[in-house]
Image 1 (cartoon, rainbow, N blue to C red):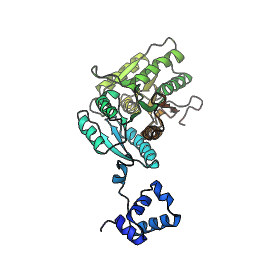
Image 2 (image 1 turned 60 degrees about the horizontal axis):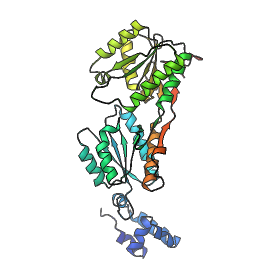
Image 3 (image 1 turned 180 degrees about the vertical axis):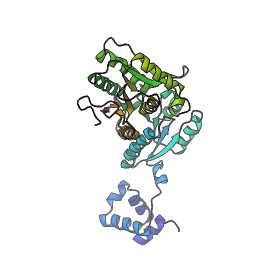
Image 4 (image 1 turned 30 degrees about the vertical axis):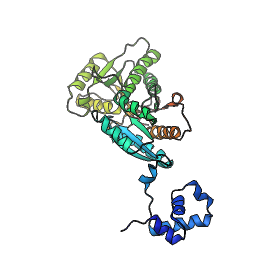
Length: 353
């Protein structure tokens, strides 16, 4: 089928091509026309099956690009990224912006930058574990005056949106104290010495130590570690050692740096003959969909990933459209919520919420 042209619509409506273009692209001049003229053009375009070339319209240099780039690395869970993307898409489409997706694999920075520039992106949203991996890209974006922001990360020299991880850990620590726990530990990811500790890991570990002082004074910090391989089931020796230590040290509660770590520990605890929460309470972080349906269901600190995506997108577009240029006051930390389930139930009810 031949695509409907502006010329076809103009001929049927009895107007010139420029008038049709103004109306269908919703340009200011179209509102100087009579309402019935605009309505006639839109009706004929619909009847003829016309669809606007959104790509051409979005990168039109005369009106400013309406394309955003979403750049993500390997964040450990498709669900995290997918829910953030949903928020980005919702906010972008509501403000008439398109979004292109780019995967940063560690050795393709130039290719990603080339695609961002090729799409004439008006702004860039990064979803990365740390700013170090995109510093070179950020410098080149700044040189071209292309604004950018971070989601699930709040670097000092750029704006970003994440959750209040400290608040979540402290809520969890207070809950464990009310539940009668006496010796909480923290299960984190094993970090390579050559790799800087990511913001979210550092924030959650520091909050755990702060929570010990507030709710478990005199108790020393107990850090357990799981390597990345054990999270995908290739190596289990690391977790087996941690479970042996949990038994020997009398640890009665464990906060996990992520739901992924909690799921694997829960699985291996069952294999080792340990019961949750009878032998120890367990709390994850993120509240993934599996948390509510695993056995037993996982108590977790819920992050609103969709809201993070929506907020960073709205902030970025506001800066693109010169409605805001203050980066420092736009580092937002969204409140989190402790969702109590079977692995650490409400002490007042002693059951799943």
